[in-house]
Image (tube, rainbow, N blue to C red; front, side):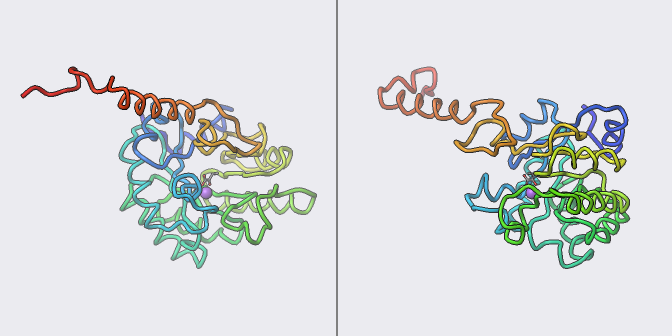
Length: 266
Ligand code: KIV
Ligand code: NA
Protein backbone atom coordinates (compact mmCIF):
# COMPACT_ATOMS: atom_id res chain seq x y z
CA UNK A 1 0.00 0.00 0.00
CA UNK A 2 1.15 3.54 -0.70
CA UNK A 3 2.06 5.56 2.35
CA UNK A 4 -0.48 8.22 3.27
CA UNK A 5 1.43 11.49 2.94
CA UNK A 6 1.06 15.22 3.42
CA UNK A 7 -0.19 15.89 -0.12
CA UNK A 8 -3.04 13.44 0.50
CA UNK A 9 -4.26 15.71 3.30
CA UNK A 10 -4.90 18.68 1.05
CA UNK A 11 -6.23 16.35 -1.67
CA UNK A 12 -8.76 14.87 0.75
CA UNK A 13 -9.93 18.32 1.80
CA UNK A 14 -10.32 19.45 -1.80
CA UNK A 15 -12.29 16.31 -2.67
CA UNK A 16 -14.41 16.41 0.49
CA UNK A 17 -13.18 12.94 1.48
CA UNK A 18 -13.30 12.55 5.28
CA UNK A 19 -9.95 11.79 6.93
CA UNK A 20 -9.52 9.18 9.64
CA UNK A 21 -7.11 9.26 12.57
CA UNK A 22 -6.78 7.02 15.63
CA UNK A 23 -4.29 6.98 18.43
CA UNK A 24 -1.89 4.03 18.63
CA UNK A 25 0.86 3.29 21.12
CA UNK A 26 2.34 -0.11 20.29
CA UNK A 27 3.15 -2.70 17.63
CA UNK A 28 0.17 -4.91 18.53
CA UNK A 29 -2.65 -2.50 17.78
CA UNK A 30 -0.99 -0.16 15.25
CA UNK A 31 -0.82 -2.75 12.41
CA UNK A 32 -4.47 -3.67 13.04
CA UNK A 33 -5.50 -0.02 12.58
CA UNK A 34 -3.13 0.33 9.62
CA UNK A 35 -4.65 -2.65 7.86
CA UNK A 36 -8.13 -1.33 8.63
CA UNK A 37 -7.26 1.69 6.49
CA UNK A 38 -6.90 4.42 9.09
CA UNK A 39 -5.11 7.32 7.36
CA UNK A 40 -3.13 8.69 10.30
CA UNK A 41 -1.94 7.06 13.52
CA UNK A 42 -1.29 9.53 16.30
CA UNK A 43 1.07 8.39 18.99
CA UNK A 44 -0.65 10.70 21.43
CA UNK A 45 0.65 11.83 24.76
CA UNK A 46 -2.69 10.32 25.84
CA UNK A 47 -0.39 7.31 26.30
CA UNK A 48 0.01 8.80 29.78
CA UNK A 49 -3.65 8.20 30.64
CA UNK A 50 -4.42 5.22 28.47
CA UNK A 51 -1.30 3.08 28.86
CA UNK A 52 0.77 4.38 31.77
CA UNK A 53 -1.94 4.94 34.36
CA UNK A 54 -1.37 8.66 34.88
CA UNK A 55 -4.38 10.90 35.56
CA UNK A 56 -3.28 13.41 32.88
CA UNK A 57 -0.85 13.77 29.97
CA UNK A 58 1.37 16.13 31.94
CA UNK A 59 3.91 13.61 33.31
CA UNK A 60 4.64 12.07 29.88
CA UNK A 61 8.27 12.42 28.75
CA UNK A 62 10.01 12.37 25.38
CA UNK A 63 11.90 9.26 26.47
CA UNK A 64 8.57 7.51 27.04
CA UNK A 65 7.19 8.67 23.69
CA UNK A 66 10.15 7.54 21.58
CA UNK A 67 9.74 3.75 21.99
CA UNK A 68 5.98 4.04 21.41
CA UNK A 69 6.46 6.06 18.23
CA UNK A 70 9.12 3.60 17.07
CA UNK A 71 6.81 0.62 17.65
CA UNK A 72 4.00 2.25 15.65
CA UNK A 73 6.27 3.36 12.81
CA UNK A 74 7.98 -0.01 12.51
CA UNK A 75 4.77 -2.04 12.53
CA UNK A 76 2.78 -0.08 9.94
CA UNK A 77 3.00 0.40 6.19
CA UNK A 78 0.36 2.85 5.04
CA UNK A 79 -0.66 5.23 7.80
CA UNK A 80 1.08 8.55 8.42
CA UNK A 81 2.64 8.27 11.89
CA UNK A 82 2.32 11.46 13.92
CA UNK A 83 4.24 11.90 17.16
CA UNK A 84 2.79 14.11 19.89
CA UNK A 85 5.33 16.37 21.56
CA UNK A 86 4.78 15.98 25.31
CA UNK A 87 4.38 18.78 27.84
CA UNK A 88 7.62 20.68 28.44
CA UNK A 89 9.38 19.46 25.29
CA UNK A 90 8.64 22.37 22.91
CA UNK A 91 7.16 25.40 24.70
CA UNK A 92 10.48 27.14 25.51
CA UNK A 93 11.02 28.10 21.90
CA UNK A 94 11.32 27.03 18.26
CA UNK A 95 14.81 25.56 18.85
CA UNK A 96 13.62 23.32 21.69
CA UNK A 97 10.63 22.31 19.57
CA UNK A 98 12.85 21.46 16.59
CA UNK A 99 15.25 19.44 18.74
CA UNK A 100 12.39 17.33 20.13
CA UNK A 101 10.77 16.89 16.72
CA UNK A 102 14.10 15.81 15.21
CA UNK A 103 14.34 13.06 17.84
CA UNK A 104 10.84 11.86 16.92
CA UNK A 105 11.87 11.53 13.27
CA UNK A 106 15.48 10.32 13.63
CA UNK A 107 15.18 8.01 16.62
CA UNK A 108 11.60 6.85 16.24
CA UNK A 109 10.63 7.13 12.57
CA UNK A 110 7.70 9.54 12.89
CA UNK A 111 6.51 11.24 9.70
CA UNK A 112 5.07 14.32 11.40
CA UNK A 113 4.69 15.85 14.85
CA UNK A 114 1.83 17.50 16.73
CA UNK A 115 1.86 19.99 19.56
CA UNK A 116 -0.73 21.99 21.47
CA UNK A 117 -1.28 25.72 21.28
CA UNK A 118 -2.22 28.78 19.26
CA UNK A 119 -0.67 31.73 17.46
CA UNK A 120 2.19 32.06 19.98
CA UNK A 121 3.60 28.92 18.34
CA UNK A 122 3.71 30.18 14.75
CA UNK A 123 7.51 30.48 14.86
CA UNK A 124 7.73 26.90 16.12
CA UNK A 125 5.60 25.71 13.22
CA UNK A 126 7.52 27.82 10.70
CA UNK A 127 10.94 26.55 11.82
CA UNK A 128 9.91 22.89 11.74
CA UNK A 129 8.28 23.37 8.34
CA UNK A 130 11.43 25.02 6.96
CA UNK A 131 13.35 22.07 8.39
CA UNK A 132 11.21 19.56 6.53
CA UNK A 133 9.03 18.37 9.39
CA UNK A 134 5.25 18.40 8.88
CA UNK A 135 3.41 19.88 11.85
CA UNK A 136 -0.13 19.14 12.99
CA UNK A 137 -1.51 21.88 15.23
CA UNK A 138 -3.89 21.24 18.14
CA UNK A 139 -6.42 23.88 19.26
CA UNK A 140 -9.48 24.07 21.48
CA UNK A 141 -9.20 22.01 24.63
CA UNK A 142 -5.49 21.30 24.97
CA UNK A 143 -5.03 18.74 27.77
CA UNK A 144 -1.46 19.83 28.60
CA UNK A 145 -2.92 23.21 29.71
CA UNK A 146 -5.76 21.77 31.77
CA UNK A 147 -4.44 23.37 34.95
CA UNK A 148 -4.77 26.80 33.35
CA UNK A 149 -7.99 26.05 31.49
CA UNK A 150 -9.70 24.87 34.66
CA UNK A 151 -10.28 21.27 33.67
CA UNK A 152 -11.64 19.38 30.70
CA UNK A 153 -13.87 22.09 29.23
CA UNK A 154 -15.27 23.09 25.86
CA UNK A 155 -13.19 25.93 24.36
CA UNK A 156 -14.16 28.63 21.87
CA UNK A 157 -17.60 29.35 23.32
CA UNK A 158 -18.75 32.94 22.84
CA UNK A 159 -17.91 35.43 20.10
CA UNK A 160 -14.47 36.51 21.38
CA UNK A 161 -13.20 33.01 22.12
CA UNK A 162 -14.51 31.76 18.77
CA UNK A 163 -12.75 34.56 16.88
CA UNK A 164 -9.53 33.90 18.78
CA UNK A 165 -9.70 30.23 17.82
CA UNK A 166 -10.32 30.98 14.15
CA UNK A 167 -7.43 33.47 14.18
CA UNK A 168 -5.10 30.95 15.82
CA UNK A 169 -5.98 28.31 13.23
CA UNK A 170 -5.36 30.75 10.37
CA UNK A 171 -1.96 31.80 11.71
CA UNK A 172 -0.82 28.23 12.32
CA UNK A 173 -1.98 27.17 8.85
CA UNK A 174 -0.22 30.17 7.30
CA UNK A 175 2.95 29.22 9.19
CA UNK A 176 2.83 25.81 7.51
CA UNK A 177 0.74 23.49 9.70
CA UNK A 178 -0.45 20.59 7.52
CA UNK A 179 -3.59 19.93 9.59
CA UNK A 180 -5.30 21.27 12.70
CA UNK A 181 -6.80 19.09 15.42
CA UNK A 182 -9.82 20.73 17.07
CA UNK A 183 -10.66 19.26 20.48
CA UNK A 184 -13.89 20.03 22.33
CA UNK A 185 -15.04 23.11 20.45
CA UNK A 186 -18.62 23.99 19.49
CA UNK A 187 -19.63 22.46 16.16
CA UNK A 188 -20.33 25.82 14.57
CA UNK A 189 -16.88 27.13 15.53
CA UNK A 190 -15.17 24.03 14.13
CA UNK A 191 -17.20 24.47 10.93
CA UNK A 192 -16.03 28.08 10.67
CA UNK A 193 -12.37 27.08 11.13
CA UNK A 194 -12.80 24.37 8.51
CA UNK A 195 -14.18 26.94 6.09
CA UNK A 196 -11.44 29.53 6.52
CA UNK A 197 -8.26 27.41 6.53
CA UNK A 198 -7.06 25.52 3.48
CA UNK A 199 -5.59 22.56 5.39
CA UNK A 200 -7.75 19.84 6.96
CA UNK A 201 -9.34 20.15 10.37
CA UNK A 202 -9.45 16.92 12.38
CA UNK A 203 -12.12 17.00 15.06
CA UNK A 204 -12.51 15.28 18.41
CA UNK A 205 -15.61 16.56 20.14
CA UNK A 206 -15.89 19.18 17.39
CA UNK A 207 -18.95 17.95 15.51
CA UNK A 208 -19.36 16.69 11.96
CA UNK A 209 -18.49 19.81 9.94
CA UNK A 210 -14.74 19.19 9.90
CA UNK A 211 -12.45 17.46 7.41
CA UNK A 212 -11.77 14.38 9.52
CA UNK A 213 -12.13 12.76 12.92
CA UNK A 214 -9.74 11.44 15.56
CA UNK A 215 -10.53 9.23 18.54
CA UNK A 216 -8.47 7.69 21.31
CA UNK A 217 -8.46 4.01 20.33
CA UNK A 218 -9.28 2.69 23.79
CA UNK A 219 -12.45 4.82 23.80
CA UNK A 220 -13.28 3.82 20.21
CA UNK A 221 -12.90 0.10 20.90
CA UNK A 222 -14.63 -0.07 24.28
CA UNK A 223 -11.60 -0.84 26.43
CA UNK A 224 -12.74 1.20 29.44
CA UNK A 225 -15.89 1.57 31.50
CA UNK A 226 -15.89 5.36 31.05
CA UNK A 227 -15.47 7.24 27.80
CA UNK A 228 -16.11 10.88 26.92
CA UNK A 229 -19.49 12.04 25.63
CA UNK A 230 -18.04 12.98 22.24
CA UNK A 231 -16.71 9.47 21.66
CA UNK A 232 -18.48 6.30 20.57
CA UNK A 233 -17.74 2.65 21.35
CA UNK A 234 -17.44 0.95 17.98
CA UNK A 235 -16.66 -2.35 19.62
CA UNK A 236 -16.52 -4.20 22.91
CA UNK A 237 -12.89 -5.26 22.79
CA UNK A 238 -12.38 -4.92 26.54
CA UNK A 239 -15.14 -7.47 27.20
CA UNK A 240 -13.72 -9.76 24.50
CA UNK A 241 -10.29 -9.65 26.12
CA UNK A 242 -11.81 -10.31 29.54
CA UNK A 243 -13.61 -13.37 28.15
CA UNK A 244 -10.47 -14.67 26.46
CA UNK A 245 -8.46 -14.37 29.69
CA UNK A 246 -11.23 -16.05 31.68
CA UNK A 247 -11.57 -18.92 29.21
CA UNK A 248 -7.81 -19.44 29.33
CA UNK A 249 -7.75 -19.51 33.14
CA UNK A 250 -10.70 -21.92 33.20
CA UNK A 251 -9.05 -24.25 30.69
CA UNK A 252 -5.86 -24.34 32.74
CA UNK A 253 -7.76 -25.02 35.97
CA UNK A 254 -9.90 -27.78 34.47
CA UNK A 255 -6.83 -29.16 32.65
CA UNK A 256 -8.39 -28.94 29.18
CA UNK A 257 -5.37 -26.90 28.06
CA UNK A 258 -2.77 -27.79 26.96
CA UNK A 259 -3.51 -31.03 25.10
CA UNK A 260 -1.23 -33.31 23.09
CA UNK A 261 -1.46 -30.97 20.09
CA UNK A 262 0.26 -28.24 22.12
CA UNK A 263 2.87 -30.61 23.52
CA UNK A 264 6.29 -31.38 22.05
CA UNK A 265 7.37 -34.99 21.70
CA UNK A 266 10.70 -36.15 23.04
O1 KIV B 1 -2.96 12.57 22.77
C1 KIV B 1 -4.01 12.43 22.10
O2 KIV B 1 -4.64 11.35 22.09
C2 KIV B 1 -4.50 13.56 21.33
C3 KIV B 1 -5.80 13.39 20.59
C4 KIV B 1 -6.93 13.40 21.55
C5 KIV B 1 -5.98 14.41 19.54
O3 KIV B 1 -3.87 14.57 21.31
NA1 NA C 1 -2.23 14.74 22.85
